Amino acid sequence: MIIDELVGFSNLYGSNEELVLAGGGNTSAKDGDIMYIKGSGTRLCDITAEGFVAMSRSKIAEIFTKTYPDNDKEREALSLADLMAAKLPNQENKRPSVETTLHSLFPQRFVLHLHPALINGVTCSNEGKIACDRLFGNRVLWIDPVKPGYTLAKICYDTLAEYKNATGNDADIVLLANHGIFVADDTVEGLGDKLFFVMDKIREEITNEPDFSVGEFDGEKGRDIFNEISEVFGEDSVVTYEPSALSLEYAKNKESFDKIYYPFNPDQVVYCKPYPVYVEVLGEVKGIVEEYKAKNGFLPKIVFVKDCGLFGVDYSQKGSETAVALFNDAMKISVYARDFGGGKPMSPDLTDFIVNWEAESYRSKQ
Ligand SMILES: [Zn+2]
Image (cartoon, rainbow, N blue to C red; front, side, top):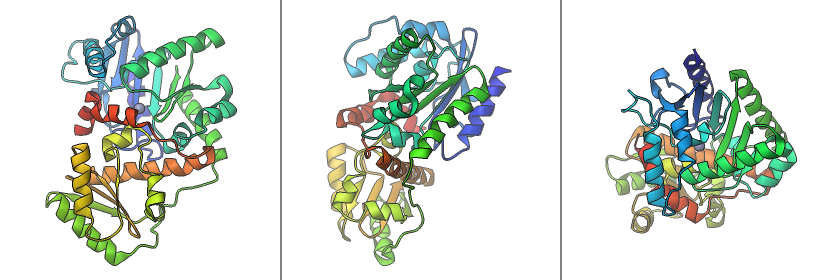
């Protein structure tokens, strides 16, 4: 059964922390006019057949024949409504992944989409496109940064068609700037071959490894800041403290912190909020957090503290730990990107779009 193969490789790749964190990544399989796609709010590591949504491929294809308004909100709402209408009967309670339309563009049976830090070391770097050309030539297709949702799907639709015209082949490895990778193949084995072909090539270029061992931190200050954060965020808050050598490096001074301030990819925005805050001395947390809230309308989830490192804070154990895991991932990306001209975060416009994106906010609520 095709669905068993789909569940099998979803669980396999989903349980590898080098490849998938939290609800990140998604998978699909096609069988005639049916495409099975990961449901929003599920996780690849433990998804079952029930977690996939059965969709009509021909109905999804109609989305690309339509013209939607330029206004972000209207365009996303209307294209999302058309996507929901492409669900097969008895799927009413499920919601397909926000990246369903992208999966539908590949004619191959299986599609695997991931956001691995190693690959994002290239896709979130200043020389990403150059590195992609140099390492892979036209074997791998590169897509510049673009608003997720309908806009990204439409640009991929056009670019995949151009690729087919130019090369005679269907694209089967695509790198999305500030986002991740898509691989497509008619066999499950082929997916793995393509994914690891890309990862192995990138790994050969890497000369810097992130250091997550415990660094030299100020324990007394760390404990006091921990209490201060708990007090400012309230008694329901859960604080996770990780004084890794790498976080201490970024917390050294404002200049180092600025290198990790802007988000690299959508997942970071969803799970960590778009921006972390920087605290130098005791007693500052309240004022800095209030200022952040007044400016953004929500609380930060990541606090960097000079000589102490990284604190994650949220209103559940899971949320707090996930924020730290995703921010560790961002720091990993920034280290890998050093071999590709340094990290290149998303633009503020793109970041704001993701903050406001209805579909993304749905995902973070799961
Ligand atoms: Zn993605």
